[in-house]
Image (cartoon, rainbow, N blue to C red; front, side, top):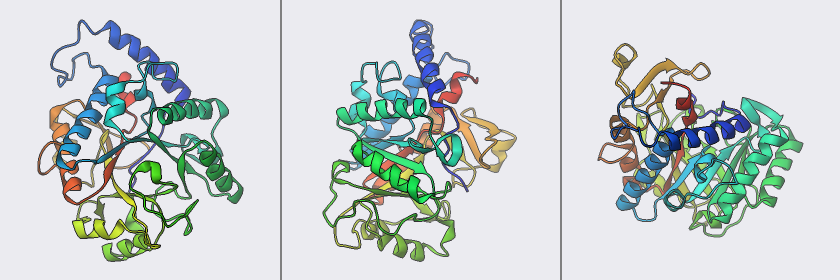
Length: 341
C-alpha cells in the first residue's frame, strides 16, 4: 500500500512549469469556460491552485483555523514556478505551510542517495521563498545511514525547516523514538513546531488501538497520519484524534490528516471496481507503473472535487468533523497533465 511518490525531476519540472505558464497565458483567450470537459484547454497549474484554495475555504468554513499544507507543489507559489516569479497572494493566503520530499536525500525514489545539488538548490530557493512569506516548510528526506540522517536534520534545521527522516519509503514506521529538537512546549501553530512524524501506512500494526497507543506515546510536535486505519475501514474518531493531540511529555501538538487530491486509490471507500472497464470522466485508468492501485485524476472536474471536499461524505468534511487540526494534501505529480490528454 503506497500513497506518495515523487517521480518527476525537479529541474525539468521547473522548466516545464515555466513553459506551461507561458502556454496557459497564450491560451487564455481560447480556454473554454467549462474546464470539466476533457478536451477543453485546461490551465492545469491554475486549476490545481484553485482546487487547493477551494479546499482551504471550505475546510476553514467547517472548522476555523484548519491548516492546509500541500506537498510537492512548490512551483504553485509563484507565477513562473520558480523563485524569480511573483508570489501568488491568493494561493499563499489559502495555505499554512508547504511540504517537500527528497530535498537532501532520496531524490527520484533512490533512498539513501544524496539529491543532486542543482535540484537541491532549486528546492531550497522555493522553500526559503515560502518561509519569507510566512509559510512553514516541512521536509521529508529518505535515508537510513546514520551520518546522512544527522546531516539531513542539521541542514534542514539550519535553513529554518522542520523535518522528518523516513527510513522506510512506505512511511509505515516511526523512524526514531526521540524526535529531533524534542521539547515539552505546546505547539499551537506550525511556527511552534520543531519536528514532525509522517506515518500514513499503519499496516505494520495489528489493530487501531495498538497504532493509536504507539503514536500517542511519542513526543513529535506534528503528526501527519492517514485519517483511517486499515485503509478506509476504520476511521480515526474524534476521541482518537483528541487523544493524539497531547504529546507523551504533556505538551499539545498538531494532528494533520493525509489526503490524496491528485490521484485516486483503489483501496478507498469511494472506489468502484467497475471503473476499470467503465471509468468516470475524471479518472485515468492507466495504473501508475510504480505504485499498484494508484491512478491519476482530472482534478479540475467537479465529480472528483466532490469526493475531496464540499459535502458531508467528502474527506475534508470527515476530517474536520473528527477534529483534525489540518490536512496534508498530496498533489501527486499534477504536472502529468501537461503532457497527457
